[in-house]
Length: 127
Image (cartoon, rainbow, N blue to C red; front, side):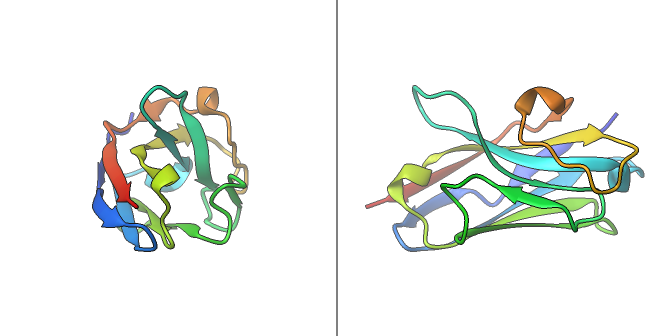
């Protein structure tokens, strides 16, 4: 089992940047593929980015491609989401998620595939 704690959210003006972090407990972080999702008020949760166990497999939602970058540091049990050129429509609670898998390059954009979720961190982008 793994516990996830997000940090790094906040209030930023449009065009600004934020870096989210998700720290995982336990010694087996490298066995988990990771993902970032977000949920805006009144909207369903949506996929943002995913990364494989190795870090080489990466996927992004079309809405964030070219602006966001996901990465991980298995030595620090942490996954990151660098968000640049933020837009008001990026305003949401951002969640990281983890799923244990034996496959080093497998990624998924499906929230239902993830078994562990953090509590979320609020990102607010003002216009």
